[in-house]
Image (cartoon, rainbow, N blue to C red; front, side, top):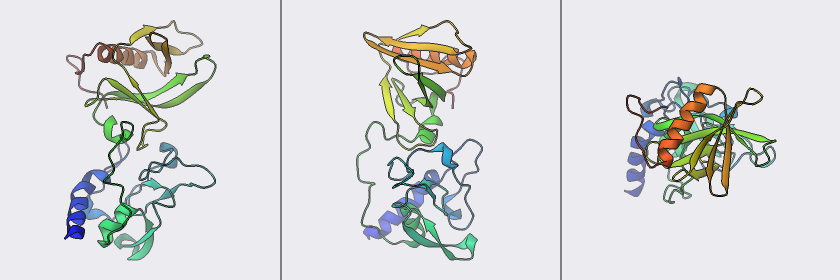
Length: 239
């Protein structure tokens, strides 16, 4: 009965689990899993396994694609084989979740019961329901180096800025509580559109790709820092 309950639960949740992962990507319906070839998530959109959330590296944790859902996963999470109808029922490498869904077999190792930490929010999931999300650069404290990432302020957690290394990562790299910060504009220098979050001794410096994007981030951050959590009047939430 436990195995049946697990399979039924996965069948329901797979409608979102294998949802189109990038804007414009066709959604893969649960009933199509294994029957239709998925559109693979591009390697450069993720920096960590989309199942276990461990970061990829070139030596011990390499990228693989699940042939059923198209997720980018590590070798450990894709160490399963299942028959896929679209490939003439031949055995293909699949992730653990797809293996359980397609075969009905119970895998003893199950991470679903673990409580999600504050950073364990999928970038694609919260970007679709965000006040604002886009690529930005975060400057080092000395202002010389920078790191480009995917920045999101979710609708359901609007007082926190989540920073991802890539727009399809399933775990945030870090987060910044926005409440109480001041948003400071900086003059445009070297064609860079720069603004800051300032609070006491904390300082974060961001670079947007355009002046318009910079202004949008400054407006949204200022509202969230003041505890105003809804979208601006007359505007829909950005995604």
